[in-house]
Amino acid sequence: MEEELTEEETALYDRQIRVWGADAQRRLSKASILVCGITGTLAENVVLAGVGCVTLVDDRSPTEDALSANFLVPPSLELHGNKTLAQLCGDSLKDFNPMVRVSFQNGDPSSFSAEFFSKFDAVVVSGCTLSAKKSINEKCRKSLRRISFYSVDCRNSCGEIFVDLQDYKYTKKKLDEAVEVELQYPSFQDAVAVPWRKLPRKVSKLYFAMRVLEKFEELEGRNPRDVSIADLPGVLKLKRELCDAESLNESHVPNSLLERLLAGTREFPPVCAIVGGFLGQEVIKGISGKGDPLKNFFFFDASDGKGVIEDISSIS
Image (cartoon, rainbow, N blue to C red; front, side):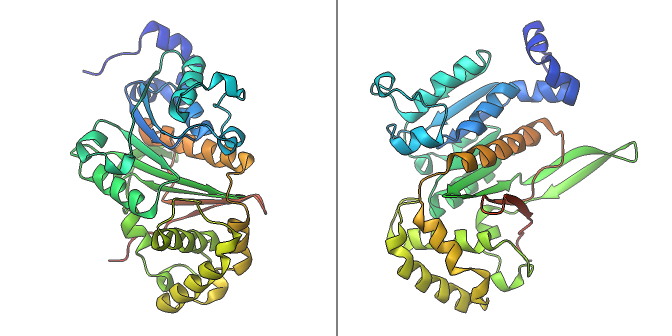
């Protein structure tokens, strides 16, 4: 029998219970979420929603880039001490909602075992390498329990979200009737392995641009976003090779878009806020079972202010 919400929880989350019901709030209050690489708006949303526990992984020291992109980091350097980004953000999150347990884990997320990830209901990774995203996603899929996997990557004025809910069932209203919906998600590895020529003609150009940059960083042994405009010739050369191998017209990956992504490798705070907020809502939907979940990519470009959802699934 599921535990009921306490009187304190019922009072604190009264508005949310009115929106999505006590059952959904109960699922949230028992959920455990792992966030690797701190994204401020995401962490804020899930903590305010009332999840049971949030574990943060980010051993980096605070930098000017982190200060500009993450409002959870105190602006004064005197307050930082020897704390990591995870610890600094955790201190802020505890103030937002003292009822949520906030803990920390040191280490490289890609080195964590499948057993470690099995402790969580949802795993969110930010700014990970291509191989790390594939590895962590596969470890989540090995668990006996269903673990929702999310990855997010913000580059300059653009952002990307990937979602893998595995075999996901939820109930939605249709003509005043409750209808059960079942969605099957591909892993990140299977999704990005779909041949480009088999994708819809109008698929977001950001999808291709992100894949080119990920591949370039992997081939060069770079960390995510450890690139600059000086790498443009090499990136364009790789783009031509990939388009040729995939039988895709090069116009689908504009040089101007790649140049823009390389020209500003810092995270753009407004984009982080928009993409992080969107991701936070998706994590809440995935746990609560309320609302149609994203399947399976989301792209945002501040140059036109548009967000695009793309369903890129493996071809059998």
